[in-house]
Image (cartoon, helix red, strand yellow):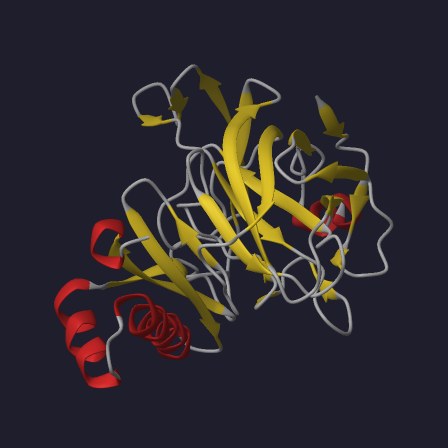
Length: 289
């Protein structure tokens, strides 16, 4: 199976990045991601070249600008038997409670994450950053937008399919920020950060054409949004959901609004600071997707 090494790193989503790997439509491949927090032993001496890096990009042959790329997440395995959680004073939702910088090494054993000797969490891996090359200027690794990017969506996990609009030939898919476990919202701006091996398969979507990222799991369909406030992020996610339901269920705008109020959840993806990220979630059966 073809593989992107964790040493094949970039710092931005960009059409100018040379491909680290070329795959065909429907071909399964592996992208390794780094243990970016291994050398992060002090906020005063942070290894920014690694912390701000991503793996890729992957050129998907047969996909053109204007089409929609489907990315199936087949598997996520830890490359080491541990991850890291970091707390930073003055940062994110709990900044007034965190009075010291702290980094914890967290063992990963089978289907459990060992927070400490008394508390364990389910192993629930997800990809925090997944994006394609945007149109125009490069976007930094922390950026989020129509191209995907730092969506911080816990649903981007094994079994999910992510739909992304394509802006350049080959899409140039890039990923990073893989977690062994993360709470919805990532309230303290760090989850269980880990190095990983991510197994993916890409294709051109024929059933769903998107202008912004859409994530479909076994049971749910979700649209995404981002903004300088959570209100703005939520509005974008819900408005995108309205367009999706109007098209696929043949509803007018008023019926779509009524259905959303009755059946769609507005949820957080990232609450640690701007850009805030949100998602609108509906059952897959209702959306007929």
